[in-house]
Amino acid sequence: MSKGKAISLSAMVAGKIFAQIKYLNISYSGELQVALKTWLPGFISLGLTPDMPDSIQQKFPERYIPYVFEKYEVASSFLINFWENLGIVFFVSILWLLFKGFEFKVSPQQNPRTASFMKKARILTQNILIIVLYSVYGDLILFAIIEYRSFVVGWNLSLLSFLVSVILIATMFFSFFFQIQILLNYRKIKKQTSSNELEKFIKAHEGSQVFFKEFKDYSLAPQLFLFFLTGKDLIFSVILATMFEYPLAQALLLTILNGLMIVYLFIQKPFKETFDFVQQLFFEFTGLVVNVVVFINAILDAGKYQTVQARNNIGKLIIVINMIFNFVTAIFMIICVALALRRFYQARREKEAQKLEKMKFQNRIQRRLCHSHPAHKPQDNENISSDQSLIQENTLPQDSVDLGLLPQQIPPSYQRSRPRKNPKDLPRGSNPSQEPPHFNANNLLRYNKNHRTMKSNLNDSVHQSHK
Image 1: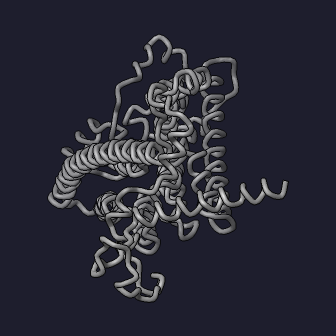
Image 2: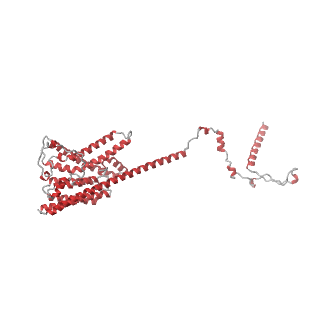
Image 3: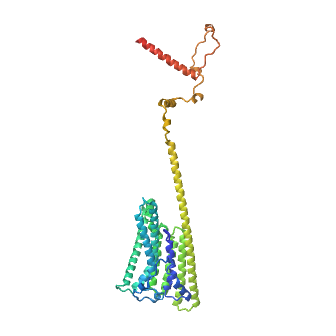
């Protein structure tokens, strides 16, 4: 009965058949009758409900009930027959109310972990409560009809039993209405809005996700699996409580009902997971085999055939089927627990990987921000004068001269063409073969500086003469 798992309801409903076929007015073998008296009315008995004290049971008035129920010690009071189921429903309901109260009281801002835990516990308990309620609806109708057959209004505990049955039946119809409304809203949102709205709807109804989580949503029919399963259980109980005088018709109707459920499974294939579909097929085929065998036994009774060996074989077959059902269902439960633990481990690893990836992403963002906006140097290194900084910014790197950006020799087109002088005209002591000096970068800079100085002096002298 994990969060959102509806297949657990199928196991509890399917297991009832081994305890309820005793209410058919059919002659069974002695071995099978002993087994029917020892088999529990439910597949899973939690043992949470204490037995009703005998002093209280004696206060309920005894009224007539059919012999097929009386021989198996079924009481005429609904409250006595439904006592164990009522205790389980009451226990889960109180647990849900406690988690709901804690969830409402704990603030998510102040205690986020506690609030998250309380919310998850409330969601889990609410889904379990729905499964428990749907699993006892069959017994509710069966024992309520038995009491209503001979109910007499009076100021005694029978009135309390009647009121409890009416309240639970009203709760049953309300749950059906609530389920259909949720599924209709699900279908409406899926057709008209985006997937984000559908995800918000699923998130808001996590406490009721047992209605739709494990089923395909291509139409309304597969999502109504729980409704059909519970409806089959209710019809089963109505047939047992009202048609006990016609055992052959009862066995035939129960077989047809089981066959229709199998046809529905093959046509709609409601489950998303193949494993859940296999489990449900196993439960339905097991019930079908039991119903067919019981129907054969009813035919023997109707024909008044004294076939002791055949009845013994039928009884042994039902006992073996019950053992197989319990064993295989236990294996299914172990597999479900293993799969749940595996999903939990994978989800935890994915969460840790996402957290690690998020931390790496934040570190990369911080490094990029540091590179794009480097921190200022200490103030001791900021005592450089503005002139020096301007000089450093505007000074031409020394490597530019070494890289040949300035020519080592002025091209011939930029040299002045001077007429050659006659060696006789040269001053005494001069070397006529001496070539004019080559202009390198330093000489060019020095020449430009001297030229600017001479031009400035000439302008000053002209200005003084004008004055």
